[in-house]
Image (cartoon, rainbow, N blue to C red; front, side, top):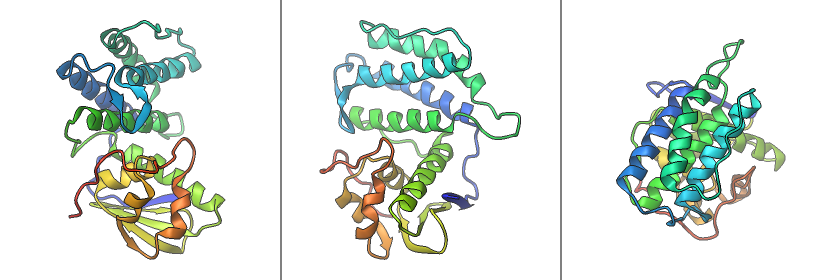
Length: 236
């Protein structure tokens, strides 16, 4: 067991399909409100433009549908932001049906939802738009990221860590814990998703010395940037 949610009273318990649908709707609104930004660089993913980030989301959607027997519909390399957005929205409802619970009552698609939600936040920072206080994907995204951190802690031979934010607490790794990390949801989420530098992670609220734990924040596709790419929300 690499993570466990031990207290999430009042947190959104929407399905993976709910979260993915809201990401799609939010990004559609964001890009409709910001025409002509397709070539803008995404600070958290500097190898991508806005158009390339959107194409990634549409391509992941297509791969998931194809994996479950659907017809492939690849994104043309020459497709504009508007065209990619249309393709994604056309395929989205088909993907939503795949993100329901399986026969054992377990949710499917949490990793896909986490990826999409993380990139929605990337896009919001790139466009200078406010971050959502409520979102159907918050809990699903955190569950995946805390689990990933727990596996990383184990691979580095580190004991468990308790992660606390407003209204929720998790254990990453195994108990007993040897450190506690707390902060606003956005700062914790962005730290777990490789969007905050080691200095920014260290500046969060820690019970214990953060230094031994920093290497565990590099895991899977996530590598913290050497220098900050986006601001930290003020502590509350």
